Image (tube, rainbow, N blue to C red; front, side, top):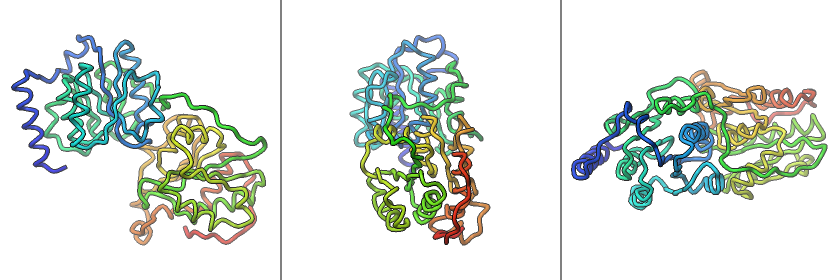
Length: 375
């Protein structure tokens, strides 16, 4: 973040405080004040919302009578709208030119406490202060500048552990139960339908950036191996509109004899439908993506692949018997792989095949074939 912009925001907040008699609440005072309205910021991606869910539920349990106002991303609308957890929901794109509309709406609720679980620094702090919140807690992710910390009642220090636990630790001074670490989806997910006698394995082909995704050729090789080894296996591709070219690439690479056992939901579902479809999977194979966390929250088995991210921070954190993680740290890889456009290629289809078969308790014997993906 531009230091000049941070300095300007700090000066603006100082002027606001001076002319409006605003003072930041002290940590030692918060438990003596009756909290009637809480604003929760979770304005980023799908995976962040699910990772934030334990902290959200812990807040609700600690302040059951308080009005909970969620500031969310419209991308996550399907998974928060009509939730029993939230009394009101506002949508914000994290941009400055829309911030005053959010501030105006928040001020009507007279919030006392803001908990910023994931939003855009420093506009999130600006909006929380100008909305009138005296107590502001923020998850810093160990990255942001500290110049605005004087406006915060509490913030997360550097934390060597899972993201879920770091967010819960942020709330410990509020008296929240930090052991409530189970991820949940804020709305009820309708159970999907499936054919009996089939083994449904989902493939999440994409990721937020290309270097964070497993190459499509690796997925295609894995699909061939799984369908050759087990006649009842069917592959379901999932992803958003941007991943449609990946689905087309997959269908071009998979062996023709197995295409009829492969179906694509890519670009055909909203988030509610995607979550419902995941309930029908026997297993999901994915990188560090939002669907991984949807599957974990719904107790669906996963095989997750990590190279550019660390599962210590964002991998499975509950029901560990259901999940298998492949992790090859970027720093441990040969330079030609680590510096390539797709370092995830370090994880081989053979390894993932074995992990899937073990997770499903299936016979791992498989006809030999040429692998399309080096590893």
